[in-house]
Length: 189
Image (cartoon, rainbow, N blue to C red):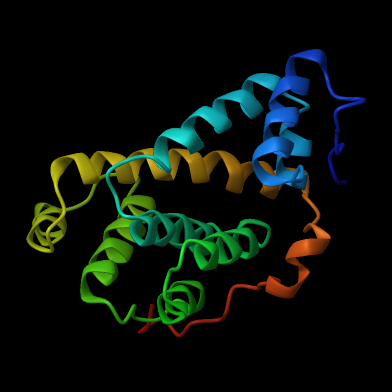
């Protein structure tokens, strides 16, 4: 059963400003934010975390690799199309986008290390090995970057889990990016 999709006219009062700001920033109110408006603290908290993550020291392509990896691992059919669109808008190489959303090796070695680090953080609930952490640092990432990945995962956990329980319908504008998680043999991805 899909959750209610709110707008500026029927959302709880505490969510209306957040929806208006979303519309101002994006020119539309995506269905994710329409669902989140049912819990104004969630909508507002997500917006703050999103803004903080997308202004952190990770490069734009790196931020999108974190988001797309989380979306892939959490099988978020709603978020993948949006992040494909946003990554393209930020100039991320199509080969990088395709590799992440298909669960294959990213052609940029540093971004592949980031993808693996992010995947391991998700799979191991943050309890990664010292070897994985060292590989992350050896690729040129910093302690701050490791902590920023955690911020990105917090943002994506909020949106991925919201979409999972809410059955958020994909926005019409994102239909061309519709995605289903590919079946990957156990030895790959």
